[in-house]
Length: 456
Image 1 (tube, rainbow, N blue to C red):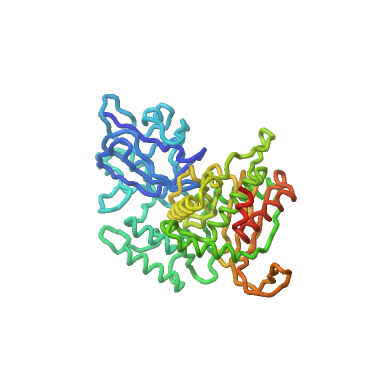
Image 2: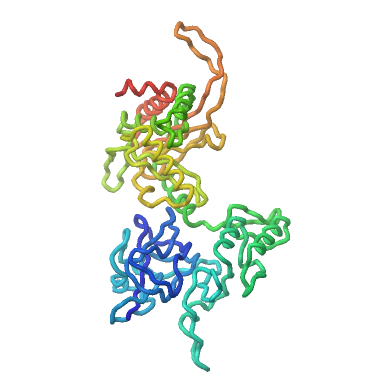
């Protein structure tokens, strides 16, 4: 029998590392080809990885919470064969032995890198703890400790089951600072809830700063690690803001006809299986307007010194998720029917909020919509998604007094549905005239959706 290592492949496009979030297997489990063995978090999304060979798991080489370089071994599996393989080599040969290439699998040498925070693999036999490694053999009298003991010679990681770890993360509780009450020194749900209560009362240890609640003593400084999506988003926004010359234009629109259309579609049996919202109509309007002004559906290629005009509109929708801001995109949005666009939009937003957007859905966008209106915000000056020429901010739709001009030229003040749009564009690609025409066309479609028939 031989032992093979499965090395971390590139789960996205050119990513260099990923964080282990959940092991799907434990030592002693039998795995088949393409079984999902691990879930990792990249700077873009959560990704489940299949293993390319079958066998018995003999060791987990990274713990949940560890950040691992692409190409580093993460799991050792005993397979049929005569040539044994070392448990944790880091070489090109080891990567070749890991089996067929997966998504973007590259020959990058690397090693498991630990976070600054305390973290270690749990090698105990406690029920339900994940991940588990193989139990370290007892050293001979006077002999050196076994290799796993040397690798894990650090302060022990708090013992807790995955649901309890999630609860602690959500409540902003540092498990390392919680006194365990469970058998074998396991931190229980009650322990975490008690610690969270103490934090709220200013009696407990400082928050870990990683959850959704920033609890702590009033006036206390809280530090939040910059990693994952937040780190990637920050880098991308800084690069975009200081690379592309941004211009933002604004327009206020009477969208009463759009809201009437939304109401009619909600009652239409043909749209009963999809969610119809004002955002759907805005997405369709921007897609149509970009088809009419293809020069705005473009990218700037600095290396080649060329402007790239894209053949279709891959429309990104900025989505706030528990992992941060994600911008997955709908491929070929301009070529989809309104019903098809509604289905794609629902799938895209739902998957993003679950934190399971595949990297392919985050790549290749050509334009973006950010719906600030869902937060009750009227407008903003959005920053371009890197590589794109335009981004549209869709503000809150409000009932507002509006001057309405009748067919005979008479005017009256009526309550109407009104919104504000803000279009930011890269001034290297989109000049003021083109940007203004694009924004005006989107506004015209929202004011009177029937305008689309005039463009057909």
